[in-house]
Length: 104
Image (tube, rainbow, N blue to C red; front, side, top):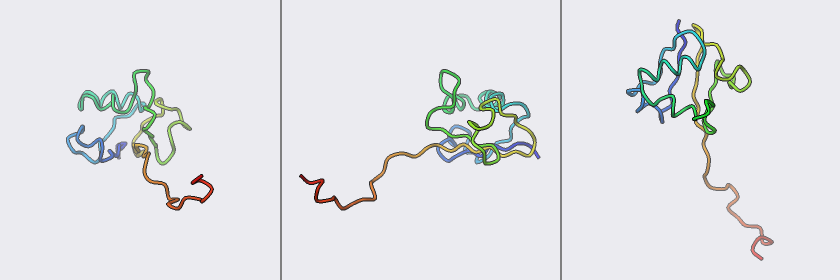
């Protein structure tokens, strides 16, 4: 079974709507370069101009964040599953009631 990259909904327009892509063996960086040949611009959405994973992108290999593995040099082999998880920020505070001291 080949390595699988699960594509989040935000990136699917850049990969012809695919939910998952098969990756070649090698490293994560090499696989992303190869995918960029098929889907131009995909790698730029994940990797910055310094060759690092963008600040608001998290990549997991079999559930482990690549920052705790070998980063972009993490091996890609048959049977592994890779998830790209964009960070979510913003929203409304859960504390809807102001403390009376805060109103001074």
